[in-house]
Image 1 (cartoon, rainbow, N blue to C red):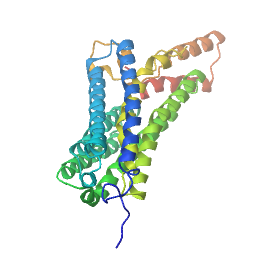
Image 2 (cartoon, one colour):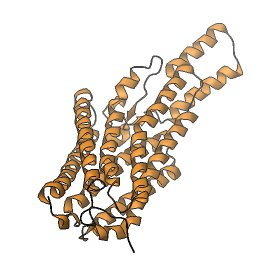
Image 3 (spheres, one colour):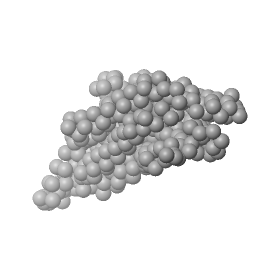
Image 4 (tube, one colour):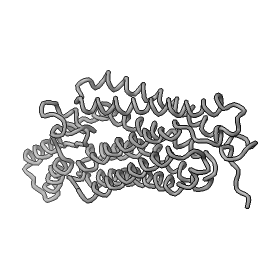
Length: 335
């Protein structure tokens, strides 16, 4: 019975859908890594007072990002230069193409956990929701680690085809986590509306921000999953998979670097930050260094109460607005 040919499995087949796909992934990844370095430089210049734990996480992600780029570059060099005109070499798995998956998985798990923590704070510590997301993250990380351990013992790409279901499972879990986190944040922000125009405007901007920072990673993961299912005997999925880790890092850096630019747009709101809570990091740092989302509408509430007092008018709607505004500060876990 004939099978779909692949340059990594058969002699004399064009390299477009295998090494060519890898090379495209390496080029795009290199560009994205440049963006990561620029964002990291911007972060350390503008957020010098951030807690050491947050700075350490940035350094770890950037380091893993660079290591991953080195490994996939070695992979392409090995097949296109070292193995030039050696069709037999194309059939064998090189160590770097296996280990790179470990760093992609670690970066993805770290960033997804970071976003899950935001869900935990915004949901007022909803352990059921956070527990579900963390279970999926741990499952994805476990499957990824198992894939690396199994793959490192294999010699050829034809043997790797035997664990395609595991590869598809990893991508499916990662995509599910991304969608669940984004939808949870959007829903929680939507339900946190207070009725005050400026506060709701900020919430709308946050919803757009959450969607924008997660859409590229989600679309890339979906594209990799579709490629794996539609063309399992090729390496087309590598074009997308090589970039996923880089997109996770960039979305994380974009979230950190956007804090000041977002807060500068607020007139009557004290603080609206994406930061780590003081209780988890340090009791001596200001609230500007936190990673959860805080929306405090104290000024508007005071202004509203003062207006009602001067006008000597009390209405049930005013009381409801004031109460909902105060509840928001509690619901979004003020610090």
